[in-house]
Length: 445
Length: 76
Image (tube, rainbow over all chains, first blue to last red; front, side, top):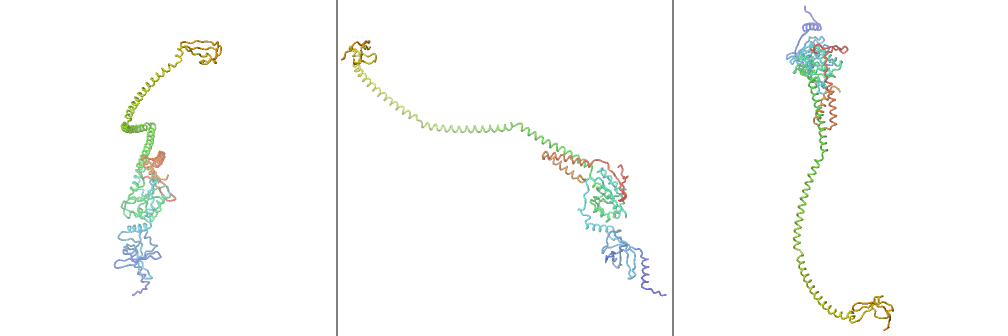
């Protein structure tokens, strides 16, 4: 019997058949014709080189980002977990995607790269947002598993290097689906507890899958806005996580992180002691220098003889030079004098004197001759006149008997009797001798 | 002085020591530097004073945080 179906019945049958058969399936293909309408659902076509099928990713089922953490891209090869859905009004069937992951590079790697690129573009990795790790932390927060090698290494190394910083461990799972959330919670706890100077987020090495929690976007943002500097030490040197990029400092290993966050206590203590010694001895040397300087000055102040000696030497030198100069000058003058003397000698008046002397002698002789002659002549005249005079002398008259009468009173020669009075005393001079007489009588002549 | 200042203080101390060793500063400046140096040394030494560290675990959540001694560390 021929059964006649309505379109609805047919499509309902198909729907039942298809949805029963393809309730859960894995399908791989290439994303094309990707559309994101306002609704927030994602529509695309999944195709290979020969065929294609419509696909939709409903927002409410979604969370594909939570699981795979990457964005669909045009042309991307993907593996989808989906079921088949028949849309009755149109008689069309399509894949309803529950989850999707990229093929080829691997889902996690793809997700990692996409997240890294996005956060980089947002500036979460910028150096300018990185806080300096404190040099001397008092309390170190460690976010890691409380068991295992990592926490042991960190505790050992920090104890060896810097045994005076407290350690506050925020224990977390470091792998698995809950790890990221636990790490975020641990960070919050450390912030609210307070007094923590630096936080280390640490985990040993592992596969990309193992370290996936450290590539969590929410965790990355939590690290970014942390007010406490965060050191990320996840995996081995070659493993990089989003955590590493966003943290204030990335350590290649947890052990390296322990070395980065604390200085060597012994080294610092030694350094300070050495600096102390140097400061002391430097200052002491400084003082000694000043003291020496003062002593030197004092000595120089006390003994001015050095200056005197210098002056003495200088003086002697000058004196010597002066002496030599004077001597030289004198010599010159002597020479000049000799010259002049010689010249003077040539000009001597001695000859003239001699000449004049001779002349004088002659004149003297002449004068003498003439004088003697004159004297002789005068003597002859004197003899002649003397004879005459002798003949005229009163003495000769007296010889002949005459006398001279002189008044005794006046001494005058009496030439006339008038001058005499009777009784006058007179003296009578004879040729030989005299006598006194008294006037007795006067007779007028 | 804040913790970050330790490094600065240390640098300053090194400066002072270098200057002091150069020996060409006036006496009163040397004296001042010496005093400052000693002060810094005291500060730094205090920061490095040996006290036994505590290793603890932070457990719970925001309103019920509690600190417990960490048992996993040998000899600490």
